[in-house]
Amino acid sequence: LQQMERTLSCCQLKDMKRLQHGDMKLGPLRFTRRHTVLIDVDTFNSQRKFLPTKGRDLWHSDFVKMPCSQSANQKSKWDVISKKLKSLASKKTVSVKDVEEAIIKYNPKYKDQWSFDALHTFNKNIPDTENYFKTLFPKIAALALKLPDFVNKAIPLLRKGQSATITLSQVQISCLLANAFFCTFPHRNTSNPTAEYAGYPTINFNSLFGNWSERKREKLRAIMHYFKEVTDESTRPKGLVTFHRECLSYTDMPTWESCKENLSKLHITSEGQIELEGKGMLQVDFANSLIGGGVLGSGLLQEEILFLINPELIVARLFTEKLEDNECLIITGSQQFSSYSGFGDSFEWAGPYEDQSERDQWARRKTQILAIDAMNFRHCMDQYKRRHINRELNKAYCGFKGYDGHEKPDIATGKWGCGAFNGDPQLKALIQLMAAAKAKRGLAFFTFGDEYLKQSLQHIYELMFTEGITVGTLYKLLCEFSSAKHRDSDVDLFDFIKKNIRNSKSHL
Ligand code: AR6
Image (cartoon, rainbow, N blue to C red; front, side):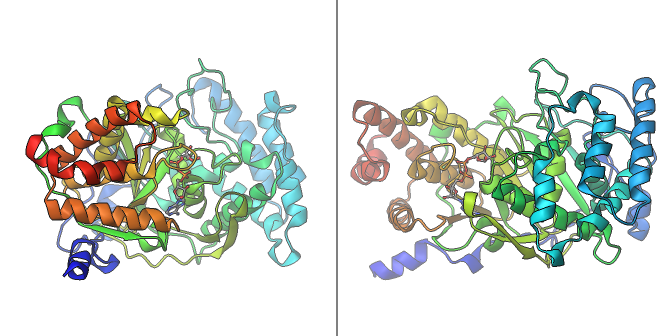
């Protein structure tokens, strides 16, 4: 009987709900006050073509300042940039030296600060068969030059405190990223805390080109592969991607202690990865509040790897202001271009990946990535404070609850916040279970090889499931645990729950 209960409460991967968009109509693609679409919606809806929408460039603090802006100051800069890029694009082969020289030409201030040694070493290091870079650089330059034709409507910034959405084509993204590659975005290079874009991640790729390391080599392989695909007519992606910033208002934050929901279904596994086995589910990105974290530097953890194999995600750095405690970013439709193995220092680019995900009615791949940044606990005990538990619950819930009546597949997650950010995997697992239950979605939990967590989580889940525990009761247990932990830092969360679950139900 016990064995039966075991299989009854935890479910299998095949039972998890994935994006369908079959039974749920998205309706025609529409431009609204809160949803900016950078392609022409009429030709898209009638002929499924991806023509850039007509529009005006705006040199304004609510919009991305574009390198090709016609504003007084920038116009002459774009003349210099486009002249340089044209000269690169007209050649058959371009050396790293030429690339460096071009970038410095229109970024003269950084001549002594930016280094290109990683790009140089990379070019020398990669076996000849792969040495397609010399011919690829001119193509990236040609793509970057198309910016004024491909994106002529101003791109709004996804600013803090506001829910808003941007949909653009994969070609537009590739063109923006080609500009990032050539470091053309204005006002984005200073790290001065009072600078205009201080609250935004970096976007120009200069940081990727310096400080050679083996990590850089593998990162550059992934990035160059992306550009190879998007500059080749036969492999150029034809679809759309949506970036949505969700801001959970204070009135929508659950009163956790009075939530009546029971736990939702759970699949736990120590094998597999969120990005593969979780395809079609809401895949959690263990994010930094500055989206993409160290992807353009030397970071190579879950988020950076995700951004390297799905480079279209990197464009979020262009317009997404630092996430606040009650905010997240949801990306629908990005495409995976590369395979990989390893993690951190052992990360290796493992070749092209052919993304077979179907597309929805808006020509977006049926993939959804949720960026939520956990708190970085320098002092481990801090995470047991009630206000920090609340913060993590609301952060996860903000992402899990979905938005605007969109489809709600189940969630693929794992040890969110438990690596670089030092979280307790037991606590984080329960927090995510509670947020998923409140959002009425199932959870697939990938422990990434952690057998102990898999078994202990399965055990505690079954216990809570059998007891019919609600989110509110579990929340109160966590609060009691928080006090117990501060009295005795050795108390283990799952042991505490085992001991107190019966009492909690009758007394709380
Ligand atoms: N699938 C499932 N689990 C994974 C995967 C995967 N693909 N990759 C790693 N894990 P971490 P954090 C497990 O440290 O603590 C980045 O720089 C693995 O056990 O990436 O939230 C961001 O930009 C790992 O130890 O997430 C942030 O700055 C654990 O998940 C910061 O790291 C946590 O992964 C976020 O750190």
